[in-house]
Image (cartoon, rainbow, N blue to C red; front, side, top):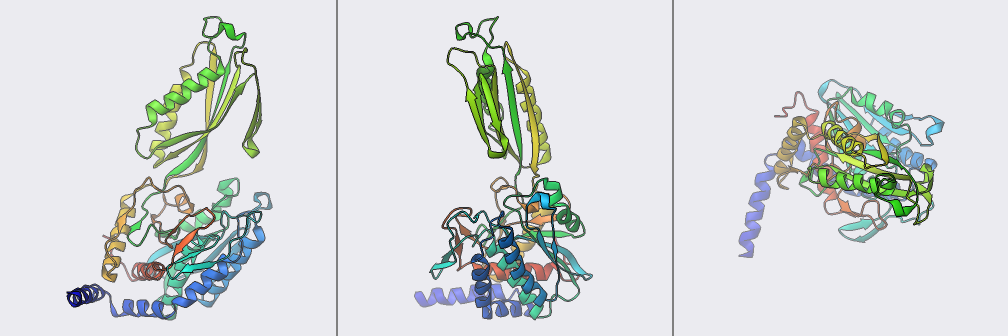
Length: 433
């Protein structure tokens, strides 16, 4: 019986690999023979602290990747940002050609682990798992991209292709104003046809067609003040704290069931006097239990799958705020953060395209992940301009946490998947439908 299952496995594997062209089999064979180089690059980059605010560290990681792209014959450049943004800048590697789709490949150099945090170097825990700062998010994803391009270049398959590989230096904490930090990134993306983001993969068989956008909101409530004995009376009214509570509760009851929409009140303070420290997300309040509160402040976020959903939610929130309790007045204001990467038809077509590749590889079907499962990322800034797919990077768990993990067993297959995706898209007039 065991021999039968082994025979069946051989048949299935042979059948799947038979769908790959001779050139594609060469790509797979090259990557298998050189996988050790991918892990060496991963170790080198993980062992450099590159927390977003560690400008020198971010640039050092950028220098490592720039070295690799220079070897591949890409034109490399460092994009500096204004000093006022206090960010390292971005690395861009590009090549020009006229064959196939114009590709925009996205990575980032920074991690959430700043210099004042305990350093966690690369450590192999067993034959299938390693840990280290940014090992999955997103130095593993960067290695997937670079290793795939290295294989294609060594085999002569990058000739006459047009590719921009863009590594931002502040994905985890964007420089402000965000429009300045991403100006060059967006302008270059507009010159391409397809964007592939190498943020963390959700296993071998799921990719992201969407990422929710994020923005902020602040609520300011004022009210009559007086002795607490008169609360709720016609002359005294309800006070600012009750009005803020009404508004937040009605946000919950009216909006909580809308798919992909979330809104969180993350900071609130009320009393007789409030001191705000927005830069440090801190507030102080002074008040007494026998005084009706004249002021309350609330700050929160809003997450959405499309601009239409965002704008509709904002209008509904404004309507709720306008229905003031007696003796109170409130206003709400909104700030834009990152836009949504909407789940468009073009994005789903890219999933179908990748699905054919993974089935040809013999690793199973690929499907689109839950559009509401992932938050905003760099790809969100440019998804409205080009068909986009994210989650093309390394797989693992614990991103943004001490003990972040990468799946070493899946890493070689994810590199192969990326290489074949880039190869097919960069052929002459690839069919996407």
